[in-house]
Length: 82
Picture 1 (cartoon, rainbow, N blue to C red):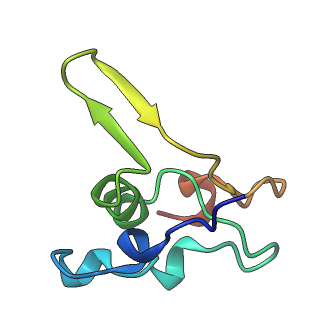
Picture 2 (cartoon, one colour):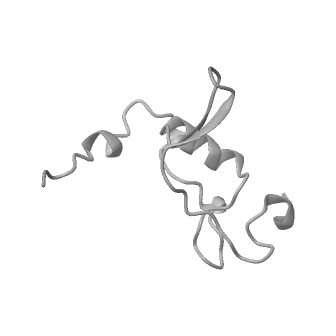
């Protein structure tokens, strides 16, 4: 089996500074998973082409599984006071 080439995924050149890393406030403090509906997180996912809106089809495209928080009342932005 061929070794997977992650060089393109890890190469951050060309990404905006605020899209290089997942924002620390977008991680659930209980389970360390990602919080849904966090604007800065959604931007990072879109710029990395992991999750984005496809204008041609009018649908959200998700290229891989995203580990969203499933904690009771923690995972939704409105429940965190945001």
